Figure 1 (cartoon, helix red, strand yellow):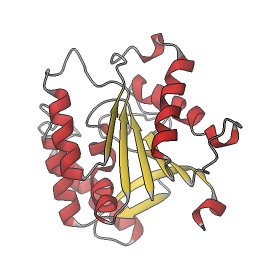
Figure 2: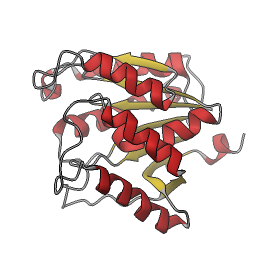
Figure 3: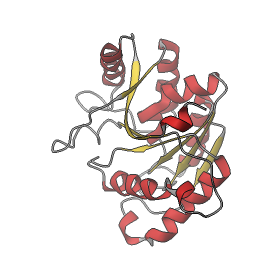
Figure 4: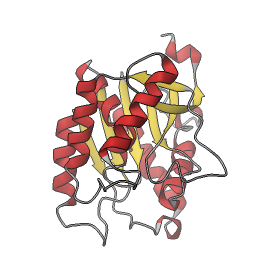
Length: 223
């Protein structure tokens, strides 16, 4: 199975699905990541190096980086951004696409989610790319998803993960400088593990990562 994460910033995929990525890559699935903003004026110049180290820990097979500036996604040509995502879809042929919750407080996350929803319709457009998408999932990223009080994150897809996978997730996040913060900031190690334990309780597992399924093609899933 091919899985594509389309995220706004480096570290988003590790925060939102690092244990899931590690588990699926260990099972032989090919996981790719497209990051729309691979650099930031507020983050170190070593960001791409940190990303490469993080992806190696999780077992990411392919890494793609666009060069849109952080916090300025709304200033770029939308058609160009969608086309860029479509090109990565054509190359990776994903069965599952994972992206941001559309109600995240971070505007880059919101825009990324909307762009992915447009690009995910590619097989229905008659463009010659015909592989059906099985599922489109929204992930939760601490310090953005839970701060959207008006439209809370309501997961309906749970993926049990092991304690080893959680440790790999923690290591993948730790590759990035200043991402893990002291409590009570939500991006602290204890909260990340506690969230995985809570999501596990919701699905009868010790630990889990949870997503919102925005689209499910039952016919494709049954193949």
